Figure (cartoon, one colour):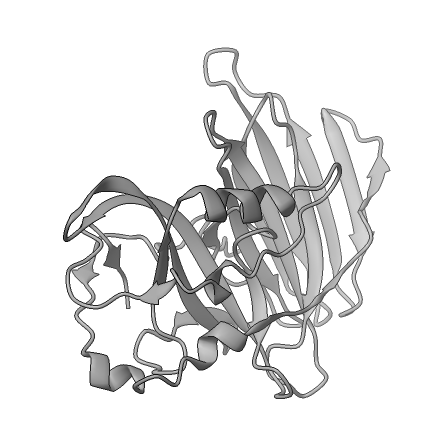
Length: 267
């Protein structure tokens, strides 16, 4: 059985520095600010009892696939449990892989259905949280797309469901995935600070592909200040995260040249 990659080198892998020219961004036509969060949340998986599983879950998915998870206890010194994930596609293909999760956080996940192609055909998104940091509590998620044919590579999205999520252009079919990560950096006349970086991905031919050179969806960033902190906190519900359209604020900008420093993105 072929195993999908547990963590695709995504928007934050060190590969090359983005050098966009402002004219290439379409002048003042910042259509990306009008992107709308999309997709629909699916019910939670059913908890079941399985031998040798600390926790076990199963679900029948709207795309005809079957999903099962067996969480096994890790070693005491690793501070990680292991989630054994198995997906049986509608065509009978089986994909199985392992994913380390923090023992304290436990198995936290979400299932969503998104029409990426705009043809009424939904793809199932499985997001699993690996860990959460202290401080501003950044949640590290990996997201897989489950289709009728198989499983995509994992896409790394920090604060998935709150700061990074599927979006669509208002009134237009189809969708993209906004993958986010928190990074340290600097700008001229500003000291070192924390920034949120966003890169849009399209789902095509069973996998994720960044759209770095799409003038309507450039790589974007926003410095983490009080206004940003307030918005982010509003997206944290008691039991669930709500999408925060942080990119609509005037302080969100396309990445142009080498600033903020150390923003390295893979094509």
